[in-house]
Length: 192
Image 1 (cartoon, rainbow, N blue to C red):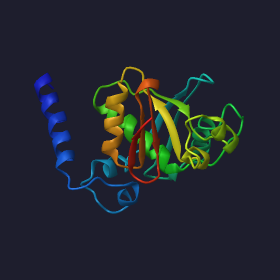
Image 2 (cartoon, rainbow, N blue to C red; image 1 turned 30 degrees about the horizontal axis):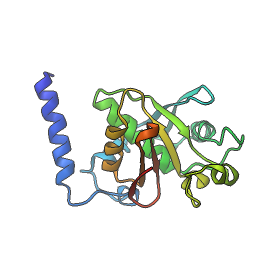
Image 3 (cartoon, one colour; image 1 turned 90 degrees about the vertical axis):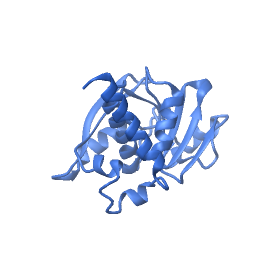
Image 4 (spheres, helix red, strand yellow; image 1 turned 45 degrees about the vertical axis):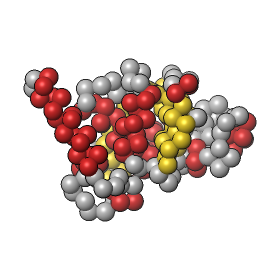
């Protein structure tokens, strides 16, 4: 594919998204809407490659396949990686959060961009969360429904824009700290 064809494909892809009358939440993604690119991606094998810089752990795992659905062992691997590493506690992680991370990673791959998602924070115990100065008192991190992520080689602004385009939950933009927050709660955006 020539550079011009690649540019046109990306341009048409983004124009098509911008022309949508509304963005779909994960609740709507569950509906039968086969023209939605997110729905199509979620119908394929869902594999994640995640890295946790604080613990130097890397997991590459397939947590869902069309043939057998969710894989319990792979889910537990992902939940372990998103544990509160500082307070050494594991918690249930919302499978929709894995779907959000999968859509982010797959979009980056298909765009030919770096796709190595670094998990800076996943689940947080209430004690850990309350100790953090700017953390929301009702943070979805405490429910296993949020992650703070960074992708080396991808600007925080671009990553935030891409995550807002997903419309699958909240997106917090922390430009000064070089990461974004994604969650499976209500669709909203804020700057930290």
